[in-house]
Image (cartoon, rainbow, N blue to C red; front, side):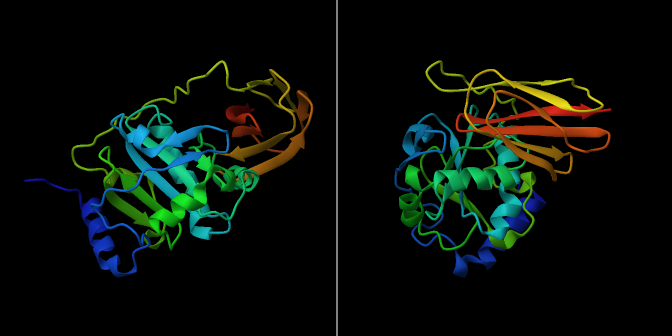
Length: 270
């Protein structure tokens, strides 16, 4: 006899109650979903059946930029991505725009609402997001869909659930799927453009210098406090620059976004 947690029971009961207003028009729970191929905002191509053939479960996040519930839950989705190894483990997460935002607009959305975690792959108009959205028949956002390694649509978390948590995602896992939290070991392909930066002094009691290890063009620099609140934002075009924010003692996160990717580092202010 399988035993489910109280939280999972409440989630299941919740979804049964809202089944008549399902946000996924073209599939029922238990259906095998169609294959698709998309290209994310960093130029990486992903094929659903290739991913699931590796034994991975897949969580799809359907969103659009002006969707307030999407904005409120995007950081949590990225937290799950970060917690379970940034797609290097048994769980793969990817965000699919509904087809109303370009790659640049998706990058801006992720910068503003994605939180200070490593961000899951995200797909804009140029990457083929609209075809996937239409195939599933998404009519409410956000919609989070869990797909099994057999390509079966297992579970959904919809906007009606309100304040979503990491535990809500975890409680939707099948009873025989217990992925271990793991660090993000993002493989670096020598043929893929990447970058890194140094931040000093750290800890600091004043201004902060940033040195990028290569020319990546314009970068967006944002700083967040431990509550996830943005306290500083500025764009730079040079490889070395100085941040002059006015903030108090504490722990902060410096997030640098370029066309080559996004990096986050911790900063201590004494």
